[in-house]
Structure formats: C-alpha cells, structure tokens
Picture 1: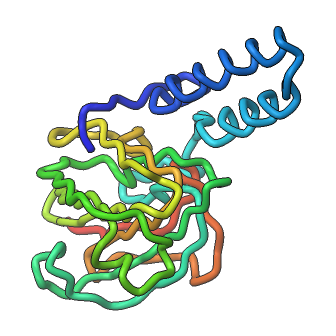
Picture 2 (picture 1 turned 180 degrees about the horizontal axis):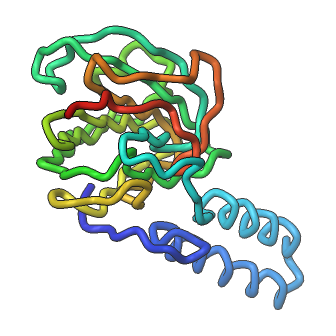
Length: 216
C-alpha cells in the first residue's frame, strides 16, 4: 500500500502508531499494577521489529548492487519472469524474517520507472499458494542502459506493505519500502556479476551482492 514515507529516525515511521499504542498500554499497566512487565516486553519487542538503523555500503562503486533487505539468499538462478519483460535475467531471492531489519533499501542509484501494488493474502512465504495469492509490490527500474526489477512479497507477519515512492530518481541504499516479513526478489541483467551464494546472509543497504556489468 502506498502513501507511507520512510524516515531516518531510529524507529521507522511505519511503526510509530503501533509503538505509541503499546507505550500507552504500558503506562496504563504500570499505573494499575497489572501486567506491566508483559506490556513492557511487548513494547520492547515492537521497538525491535520497527528499528531503523543507519547503514553504510561496504563499497562506493557506482556499479555495485546492494542487498535490498536483511535476510538469507535462498535462490540465485536464471529466469525470464514477466517482471523482467520476458527477457533472460539473473534472479535472486532473499528471505527476510520478522527479527531481521524490515526496511527495504534501493539496491543501486537508478530511476524507479513504475511501482504497482497487487493486493492479496498474507500466507506464510513457504506455502506454495503464497507466490500467487500473497500481496506484493512490483517495481521496475532503469540504470543507464540496464533495466532491473524488484518484487516484494508479503509474509504472514507483514499484514501490510509500505511503499514510500512510486516513481523518480533514487540513490543507492535509500529507504523505499517497509516489510516486516516476506521475500524480496531481484531481477537483474543477466551479465551482472554476483559474489554471494545461496545460503549467505546479507544486510540491506550494506552488503554488496555484486556489480552491474561495465559498459562503455
């Protein structure tokens, strides 16, 4: 769902309301001496889920491809998805869990040419039906002569996908979306060079997953 704007505060804006409610409930519980410790635990848990740390890329190469989110790489393979225009591309899938940082960052300085939200369910990502029925956001991007795409697939704990921008120039590592739990898929030019492997853990906005091919 669009209309939310991610910020650089230590707690993501997407979590301000729910954390504020949890804080109010904690104060009430402390005042009434009823389940104060439980509400404190809930508040700390929510602050942890919606944390929004600063990240510095491991390299400043203009061709570098940054990890878009914290998580484990579960697939690196050849694909020809409709999101890539049916052309052969390099497909990378990253599984992000609720305890990972949920902020989605742009993998490279590029132009976001379009973004489309497809509303749906919030099934566990490992369920076969999730790849068809779950809510998702499809983003198409252009970097010079290269085109690439990003797809966010919501998980069971997401309940909602947040997108901060639908079009325009975006710098590498900029916060563009928020997803508590789910899968991020990258559809990169087939000649991109990737230096990570399946099973590796990456950090959004920090880990350099690979590079776009140099083209004079």
